[in-house]
Length: 100
Image 1 (cartoon, rainbow, N blue to C red):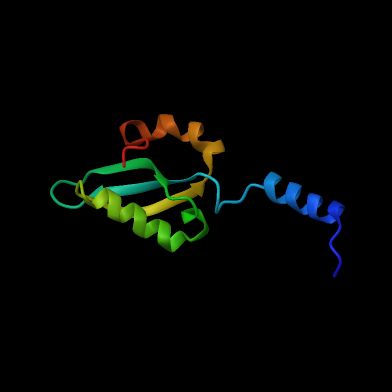
Image 2: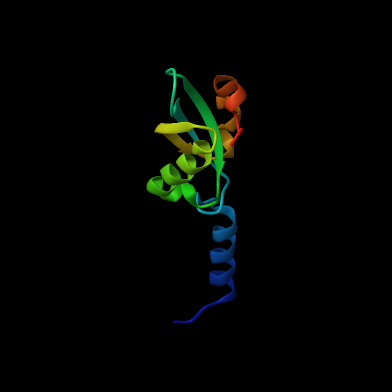
């Protein structure tokens, strides 16, 4: 196979211009409940390591590990998303916006 300058340039431009969830910022919005005591619930938004959005099971484990330290149990991840949707979720998350 012969590679020309045009082919290499086109591939490089395409690779740099195409965002991927593996290299982009990754966030999850989730629901959690208090682990003990009275029933308390919260909705939050959390930043995850780059690439975590590509693997929902990994995202679940990462969120659970981070919120468990303050006595919360993950009920569900609502969605995984990039930075472009971050501002639309801030008001709903309140004090749990990027807390963990």
